[in-house]
Image (cartoon, rainbow, N blue to C red):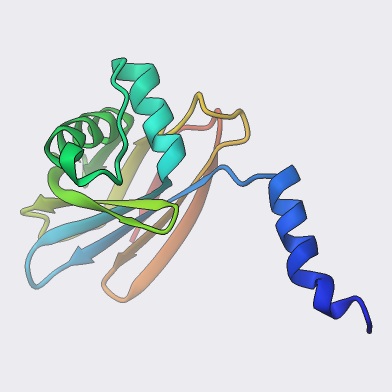
Length: 162
């Protein structure tokens, strides 16, 4: 039992030697508003690295002076890496903005005019290229049902049926 005080230290050491390469995409179907509300959680440093790699633009997403510029590149990057189709029709994700929480960046999108969600096709290569162990976890909710799926690189597509 004497090792219990060292548990946080052990957890921290494991995280250092075995970092996580995970992003979480949450999609909520709001039937009342006929929208899909999308939040994308990435590690800030990984997102900055991919924007640099893809656009040759160095950003500090936490710098308020770069907010306008950062909005452009976060929007462009995520729009290029995530594509959605509902009920057989391609969707246009409208960018709302992003915010930093600890070492994570939350990016927000909305899709309008989705009255029903029977089928959602997802294409996602978010942060592919940072690490071959990248995982993108999707949580999709519609009409009181929540479904989840893990896309581990190189797998980049899945489908949700409601």
